[in-house]
Length: 275
Figure 1 (cartoon, one colour):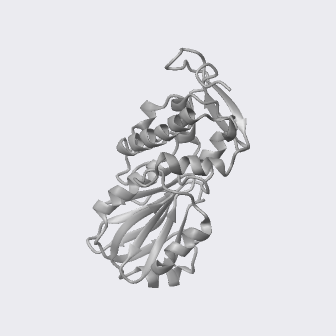
Figure 2: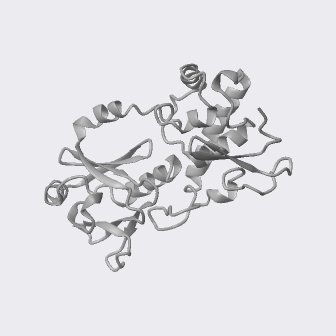
């Protein structure tokens, strides 16, 4: 958390808010968040103009006009909040980017797992190639045939773990994997090789439908996530499986259960999502 829809939301908002702005200063209060000597970091960033923001998996890419880019990962509790000059720094604000118009961008992180890295923009493609990140599920060129090919490479994988592995598909985490499995009516421990063509099609439809809706509703704020305006996302109202353990299933009125999968959990309806 945040997952693809949350990072995509922040990317879209910040493109409207800060693209084209010049960075006039950077305050660093917790140097370990910046994966570079802070003076070197400031030398790279201060004076540069932000060209655009993109996203790869759960990583936000801020492209600067000086040949450098910033890689920002929010990990579990990171936030990027656009703030006015009068806004007070929060208790967990570790970096402040100051723009030439005096507005600011706060990097907050309660658990301090997030980071900001610098990379030459020309090296972005090779960096993500080395990371072995899978295809972006919301791109138009990610079609059903692509998913089928990916699944044939991991026949013994459990389907929920398959969806959550960024080397298979980019950006899907625990929350949205639960929702996709519920949508498709598939038990999360099913082996990939056991899936029928119709079930694979249903998973594909779930990926597209649920992620698109989550982006439209600005993600989910079940934990610490806030969008760039400091507002909560509204997708929580649409959840049918994740975090619903002990609640009635919206389809069959049975009880949602939760099981462990490789150190993570999976919430599902035993009646609607059978083996």
